[in-house]
Amino acid sequence: MKSLADLEAIRQKTINKVNLRNENEGDTRIVVGMATCGIAAGARPVMQAFVEEIQKRNLNGVYVSQTGCVGLCKFEPIVEVYLPGKEKVTYINMTAEKAAKVVNEHIVNGNVISEYTIGNLE
Image (cartoon, rainbow, N blue to C red; front, side, top):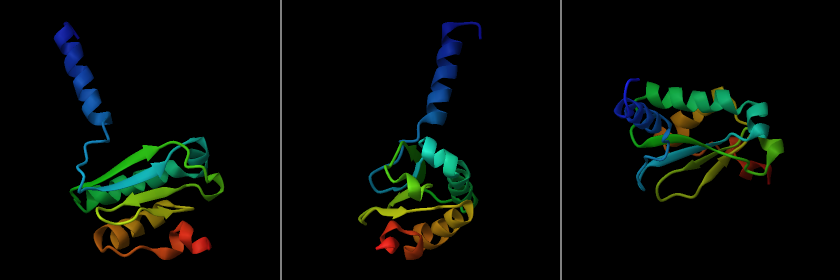
């Protein structure tokens, strides 16, 4: 780094990498709870599995982001899926294997996996 311009270029490159909010209104969002309770319960591998599965399938308009505490710690890792024009779906007790299945069944084919949802507890 030799100048202010170099520093600005590094800054902009980093912002672009970290900016997870580039989605449009018609895009699908997958939000992983990444507070300390979620991380302790295994949210990092779950988030990584979503990212890898989306990349593997070359899905456009599907974004993975993270949030803080969702408030349901005993059900962590928690994932919320927002499909355009549909109600939010909250998946609980997620694993990397379940994440791959959610991408295949819910994101690609539009079929909610009911046994993984919080609604299944009722």
